[in-house]
Structures are given as C-alpha cells and as structure tokens.
Length: 428
Image (cartoon, rainbow, N blue to C red; front, side, top):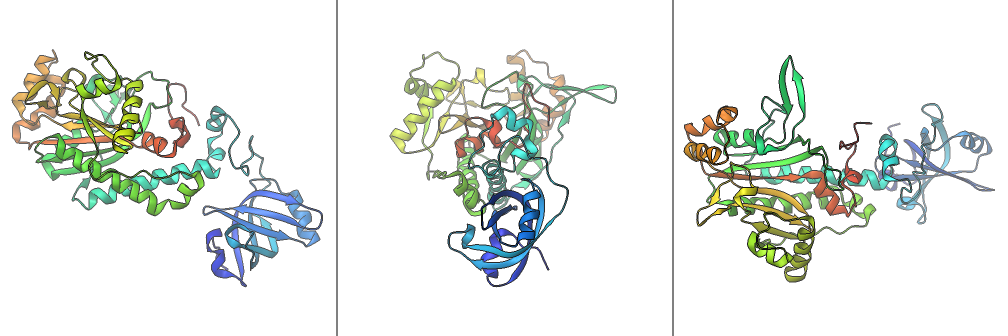
C-alpha cells in the first residue's frame, strides 16, 4: 500500500490508507485517544479506541517517527475534515528524545538562541518551516520571471584570488598555499557574463566579513543577482527589478499559499510603477541633513512610512546616491556627476535591493580607479574585458533572507534562515 500525505486524505474517504510521519501530539482521554501525525504536508488525526493500540500509543514520545494504517472517515471537526479510525500504529525507529520545546504549540515559546541551537528540530515547527517554504517559492518565482525574459542562469566562483570588490571586509582562506577569499558577491563575474549572454542571473551564497551584529545582517546570505545589457540607464534596470519582485510574490502566492496562511500574512501588491525619489529629496523627506552621505535605518523607516502614506506602496526607489558612497564601477549621472545612476529599493522601510547602471568603457574604469587612488593591477582580469567591447549594462542584487523577513514580518532575519551564519554562530 503506497504511502499518502495528510493533504490527500479527503480524496480517500472510506478507504484504508497508509500514512507516515512524526508523532506531533498525543491526547490520552478516558475513553478515547488521539494521535496527531505530522508530515511534510500537514497534520492527520488518528482516533484510537482499541486498548492494545492505546497501550502502545502511551509508550510513544513526541517526534517519534511512526507509520499508521487506518480507514479514512469524514469528520468536519478534524484537520482537513477527515480522521483515521481503526488504526495500526508501527514505530519506524526508536522512541524519540523530545526536543527542549513543544512543537505542537501554535508558536514556539523558546528564545531565538535556543531555537537556533536546536535548529534541526525547531525548523519542524510549522511557523519556521513555512518561512522556508516561502523562501523556496520566492526563488522559483525569481527564476521563472527571468527565464521568461531570456535571462541565462549562471554559477560563478565563490572563492576568489583578490579582496577588491566594494572594499568590504572578506573572509581569507588558504588555497593550496596561496591566499584566497570567499566572494563578497558575483558582481564582477555577472558583468563579464553580460558580454556572453547579454542577460544573466544567479542564485547563490555571498560572504561578508563585516562585524555587524544586528537583526538585519548575516555573514553568509543568499543573493539573487541580475545583470542585463543594452540598457539606456538605471531606469531600465529598475523596470526589470519591478517585474522580478512581482514574479517572486506571484510565485509565493502560487506555490506557498498554505505557508502564507499558516503565518497569517498578506502579500503586498507591487505597483505598476514603484514610486521613486532622488537621494536629495529622500533626505528632505526623512528629515536628514542635506549633507548626509547615506541613509541610516531611521531614515529608511521614515521613507517607508512616507511611501505608504503618500503612494499606498510598500516599495520605494531611492535613486541618485552620491558617487562617493557607491562602488567604483557605478555609472555617474551625466547631468549631475557627483550623483550616481544607482538606486536602492526600500521594502517596508528597509533597504532590500541595491543596483544601478555600471561603467562599460575601459577608459572610464581606469579613470574611476585613479580617482579613488586604486591600482589597476588587482582588477586587471576584470577591467581588461572592457577593452574588448561591452554594452551599456546594469543590474541589482536582492538579499533573499531579508526579503522573506520583511514579507513575513519576522523581527530578526535569523528567524527565516535555516542555519544562519553571523558574527557569533558557526553551528549547527
């Protein structure tokens, strides 16, 4: 008899079926006992009246893996409107050691550090696994949207020979006796691959050795990267980003509707045109000094509130960041060279995406590096490609965990990360 999942039970009313999963909870009443079995799809309720089966049930512990053969009976009060009766219950392993928290409760009451210390079991809780299902659905939507627009998915090295891109701190390692580093992003490689495919994307890990210890930063996170050629300026990139976000949210609605319902959240609507303000205007809206070189988290929150109040939008583009705060490969605004053809996208008052138009002429790269007092040699393999013809291009990167955290309302990005890596955590 083939095993079926809990969500398939309504189609088998009156039949004998076999299910298997984890002992989610036992309720031992005077005249009847209930066994709740959890599988990847949800919960099944098993009704036990036979004294021998009840005696065996009393010896089980929560999280013990079991197999149940029983008859499916309609019951509107049971999960999915059905329950299992006249069961045979067979453990598929030894009695489990119960975890240090109750997984059957609606919410996990353990502190976040305790959950992270025991992640392999904490992630079994429906609210924790729901966030990961949403993450997977968002990635599927990302890929589907870009595939429909003729993007080619690439896979770039995560170990690199120089620690140059954007000047951020990097993790050093030994590469057969030579110094090497974990890649901070696929930025250089995805630009070079525009010269091959014109439109490329990647889903992969990036590593930042910046000593942040906040609710929004991780030392390793998943980056959804996009780069496209033959753009007029950064606005073409922003249009692709808008379509990508809409596709990701459509993917979540289509593939993870049950997870969305479990968390009790609403999915935001991506406007046909996301409102945009120039950096100088953003400072004014946020009440920041006019000479502020960047937006602080408090400024981002103020801008998020403004976008919601003025435009009914959870999303806001801030364009034209000062060139001094952007990487050397960023294309300046031809009309205002002190400002960039770059942007950030804020999602519910927090920076989610950084992107913009890149330089594409070899001489411009030489000038940009010289202006920052940077030698060309460490960038030679990257910059040399621009001698051989590159189109105007640009791109962006979405932090997946931050996106899911904002979408689900999680207070800490670690709540939506399976096994987070940060300033303090390398296990489990």
